[in-house]
Image (tube, rainbow, N blue to C red; front, side, top):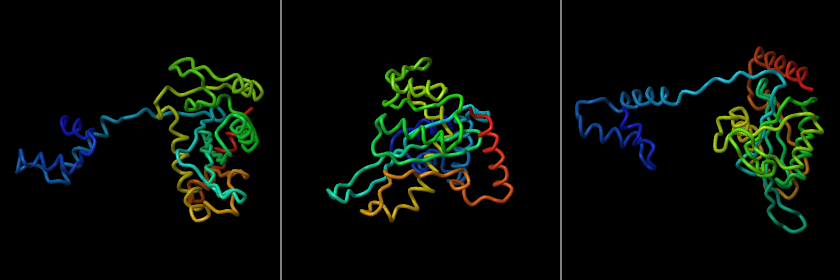
Length: 236
């Protein structure tokens, strides 16, 4: 299965194409379903990842969603794009989402301040995906942050951290948070945006894990509530 795995990485190559080529060489070989099952087994082994354990109040992961919200400016008729900030506490999954007027620091830092107020506490560190607004020099070990971002961290008594360049798995919780934001925030608002009477950049869109993961069973709601309570108690 080594060769099919390597071929699958090429653009446009599908499992069905690999199976057709395989059967041309071995007409009595696996059926398509069996071929896919064996291929999946090898892919699962190859793509094994480490399970991360998180402590309450230890870390906040932040990132911008790839897709933007938008609204129509009533005065100019212009379609205005709004970047969306997503912040997640990994231990509990407690999530904060806010649409910003733009992604500059003058809007990003107040949004992070509102995030801390919403969480009713400050985590020990804030992990960012090398946002150019905050990181001036990327590094695997010692990234350099802007002066304004460092002043913000001193004010809130927290530590800024950045993921390794091009390593999204360093912040898996917020990646999941972005995906859930598309499903639980973007999708329900799809018929409202763009709309002259609705301006997401002027209001905070906040949600917690119960909203993002709805529906939940009663015991799951209780567990989420306990984890969020421990998260708040552990923050500064």
